[in-house]
View (spheres, rainbow, N blue to C red):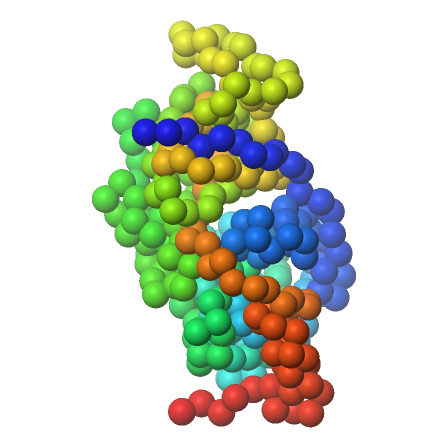
Length: 303
């Protein structure tokens, strides 16, 4: 067994998207090979409806999959194919844009005006970029939750973990998407297949992720649960942790516990031509997509 080294820890960056939605971006529109097969990750979380109510009006996607996970509030969605619905707290939508879709996503707060969710973009390989669009809408009650004896709990959105399999399937990136809670002071190790690229995103509490190599910088040496640990600085709210190669990730929860997403997938390792919401393999394919948007032939007829 080998612990995955922590390659980088960085804070999500405040960003304005859609028609004026304030969110925090952990990664995106930079080096697409960094977390291949994943392209972008946004944390949209606000207590003031003025910061999100304008939403994400009609916009196109081609060549990718978008994964929306709602924690509080709701997101109403509709598209050019006549699909529509509402994602509530705990719900997940995995949208395969494929050959192309126009859709909109309009967030609404809960009874206190709070809205919180995440959106992840996954790339599609060349052979699947022009497949027919499809949705997988999953209600929160259908997402399995497993709890260990020490109180650690894992919601399995995609993939198989601790003997349970998440409800989303048939995804090109062969991903694993876990929502994990580790109680205060608990040290926990999670297995990840060696062929996957992996990252964690901390959004509640604090934690430190152990490193296989000798860490640089300031070490945390603290007595927690009777064991002295020697690990990197604590990562807090809205922190991305990018891992290197290995087959497990070890986390030490801080004094208030930690909740984080642990996401991994098989790299596609293909050229990327990317502009806005459209991701293809070549510049000519990208130019064709925008040409079709202009002339009204972007949406392919269904068969």
